[in-house]
Length: 95
Image (cartoon, rainbow, N blue to C red; front, side, top):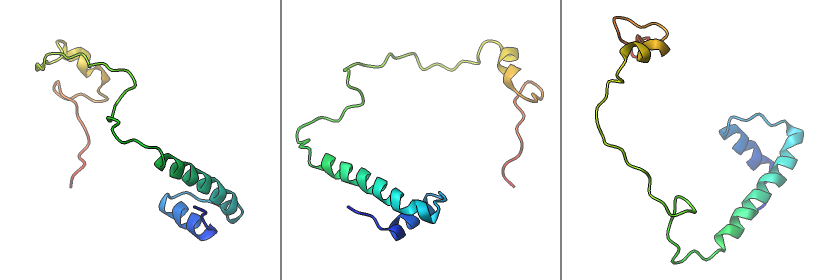
């Protein structure tokens, strides 16, 4: 699939990427090459292939789902820029 300069200009606008006019033609060739590679991937027969999240079959370790206050409130609040009365103070974000 070959892209035109106008299509690349539209893609750049949607992606909020500034591409100078002299860069449109090389960018069109590069994106067209990527799209051609993706079209080749569509030709691969994946019938009967189970989806996977990793190439290694493994299960994730589980931990008990328990509420924990961290054990040391002073240590937890060390990362707070301005703690107030033992709590994180954050700026108001909703008006």
